[in-house]
Image (tube, rainbow, N blue to C red; front, side):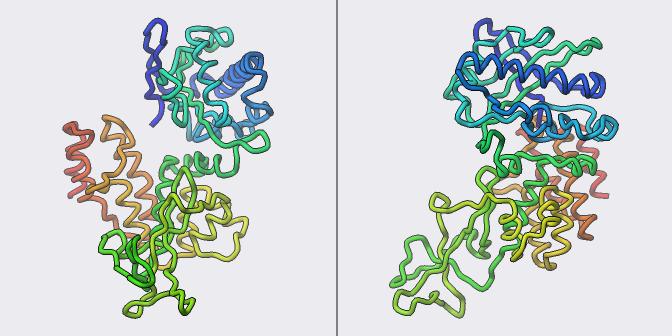
Length: 402
């Protein structure tokens, strides 16, 4: 999930593979000070070249706010070395935010930096983005750093292009790329937070009192959808990149001004995502997800972590909503079928299982649910990455059946 990039120097063709960064061995204070210096020098060079800085307010480098994922708490000087290193002694990569409008200029600047020292002992090796058109949402690069204590790191640095406001990432930009330290202390990867919210938003917004008409239906001619997706409508949908949206709207009879009814159920139509308005204010997302009229500050803070969302589920959801959320979450982890669950660890089913299982086991234990994952796990890892599993992992699966 991090530290997998191979950077290529476009002039020499030399390849540099990123490696896990041993922050504890390097020394966290040294690690922070070195990379803050690297980014400040890059900021100065970029400004000299393009007449504008990457980070207008360099305080967000020093206080850690410019960083995303687990990097955000590794680089947060308000947290003690002892506490952070206990739960996060290494890092797969460094995620640093950049205003999205600077992506092309940053690519050009990094292109000119390949093979050169940024500061003494730190050389920019290249990225995996060969052209401007290949940038996408981020530039994944490798910086080789020789630290004073003799440790060398081939650090993957991901420059993530996000929306900025008032010279810092917006609330939604931070939330959508966040990693909670409370989750890290619980041994749960950040990906579980977004998976759980996605499952929750659908699971808690089921409506069995409505039916869905086809997109071409009109009040004069209503045809009900036969799609399995619409058999049990979920009123809300969540996108990590865009926010939360309303999935359906009522079909109004123009003669009466009321919602049309068929067989005692109100008729709704799906709102195409392209026509949807996405909510990105975190308090409002919380209120929609849990159907709350008010966003109490303590609950909104809980919404920012996987462990916190579990607590909110216990507080606000009924048994059916919890079951539906569990089933959707399980499917996101190990589901097959038309849309196979995402493989989080390329070519490593054992690690993929460990990452996914950590969150799932927390959920079933915290909410006192029955573990229903065994059969799905067996099916999922049979063809993981279209390769056979390692023998040790076969043994692990066999032990789950006992």
